[in-house]
Length: 552
Image (cartoon, rainbow, N blue to C red; front, side, top):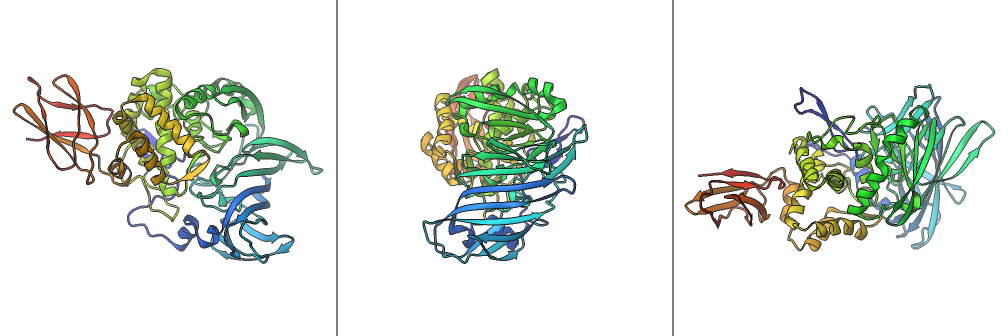
């Protein structure tokens, strides 16, 4: 989740915080720079090597808000090239890069650091480079909407520190291959902090190592593939409690880290976690990271979907900071941050986009997971009311899919327009068991993979048996909402789709004369159906995200 856009939507001018896109929004007039390309594309200096493992060793110094450390990057050589691109953003700096004891020549190109390797890079071989770095990382001015590090203090005056970097990139605070297409198979995160504090990162805690100067290093091990922005560091005067969830794959360890003064509130509010797991394992299949466990960690910002280390700052209340983004009342029945951010464990962390232009794969499915949670506990009608209620947040300002290869996302409509697109598709499938099988199948087919929109579209089309290219083109690549245009002539109703892409042929459920029936309109061409006696109008099922207009 990365929420970005504030806007006014009624309720006496209440500012809604729409869950918008992460990176700087790509307006039609926006131009991209060489740095955008270096950050957002699979450059030749990235393509020839495959990530295997990160061993990140980091010391965090709260007194002067600095970090310094070394990242050991293990990789497999795919092609015999000698120049490697690594990424680290100013004001952080690469101090030196070493391979097999030999210091290497490094050339900086903005946020890209081009390393000239001396040892022959033989295809199939495994190699390691050590990247030494340090500095004062960028401070997030509005976490998690702006990337960086948050340096705060808790009510007792203890440092309270957290990283958040989706969109802006993990290279804000550690050197890495900062492109989403390639993930390490596993990772170690070793963070050294003052002795009175605790660091919580991804995966499982292997060791707490004390040092003579009073500091401690927390050694965390991630045994599953992990995307860069999912890696996090959270530091505070934490207390810990835990439970075991009996899930589809057996016992899942659930651990909670919260500020000392919030322990009792957390024990009550975090009862939402097993409820969330039960609902999402039903809909999406087993939690994808049993080996690494599940953690919920309090942070000094709203929250984020860091893999196996979901962060939380929703002030121990239901809704979104106490508000219902759907305006229906159902949004106050659950803790939005726990549900939404945890939903990303399936869509973002298990299934991850290769390019941020396809961020809808993360956000549309996860926004849709909110109403699936509501449906699981309160019924199908409640879930439908919730997702329809979120339409008030849709702007139709830009297409959901952004420009490729420049690290730019599309419209924030990827959240609730995307959710309503999926809800519409579910109506067409018209078989809840089959729909659930499709959602679970996505998480099996693309288990621990990075994917493209084309792969997801192809899978859904194959599983539904529907030709969905115009459907996805309509909702993902235009800002047009399909309009069912109809007219009544004698004992017939004439109908067609307009305001749509060529070939758009979505079937739609309508009520005519008090009876439900399906129409199969096509773009531009009028089709006919019998008009029952006494029928005076056509009403479209509100679960379809379309409009309707009667013409003479």
